[in-house]
Length: 405
Image (cartoon, rainbow, N blue to C red; front, side):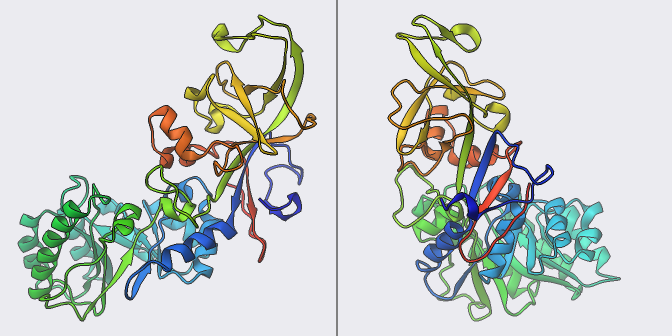
């Protein structure tokens, strides 16, 4: 990360950093990762970055501002609250509400200039009703095997019938979501199903927008190369353009444990050293006394615990790092603190020093994949858990972007 002076935050206190833990979000790494993805796209495909869940724990507003500067066509969020938050922050690009809205929320969504994803009959019925007094611009979601949101193949004739004489409902995009994006053969089968459903929507006039956008692929499907439809005989092939929807890749984390050269993790989690003391051999550490010292030891206490997103499952297994040296966790992770063994430190340590608890995995720090592997989870969950209480600081060489929470 850059020097302390390059970190920018709008603090919650009176201008002082009173935090015991913090996240450092490297916006230059985010820009790097966008370039990495763009350099691997085939054809005229654009990126719809996913910034839902507070940008996977990285802070939605600064991340969105950076992505807009990079010229993305739209941003993807999950719900109406996230979309309104972006609009209130004067984010002007298109915003796609990927999880859709309730029928009762649709008018507010449209008035706010947000684009909802319509994924069920009740929502389409409401869109048709609203179209009598306003233009309705939506994306349509198709379910090709996820079993979650979206219209099934048997719904397509009903959609076409409903929209036959409703020109003021504009389907500007059609999307799906793959349950096994890393499985190219299964995903290609689902793409063929998707293509046949778009054929019917286009052939019967349900899609009128030209061009309309198709977006299919998350990070895994993008990496497997399955993000367009075989257009050889498609009647709409000259009228469609494509987006991909990367999430975890944007934030510098691969979809599997194997690292991808050139990607840069965007988030680092650090905690302050708030106590240092020497304990005798045999001393028991933390709740339940699950760790007894096998020697006289120098024990440090770091100001980060499970309330800050540090998984309790890392008790007696995880470590902190500083200057390339590991400091093992001692005992159970507490709500607000974790103890580390600094007996063998070959660097000077002082109260107030910062240690890294989540980093890039290359400087002796724990990576998101290492943490996820130990707790039987995925790195998506790890980064989303961070930032409950820890303020975020934003590192950027080109210009300063700051926002807390």
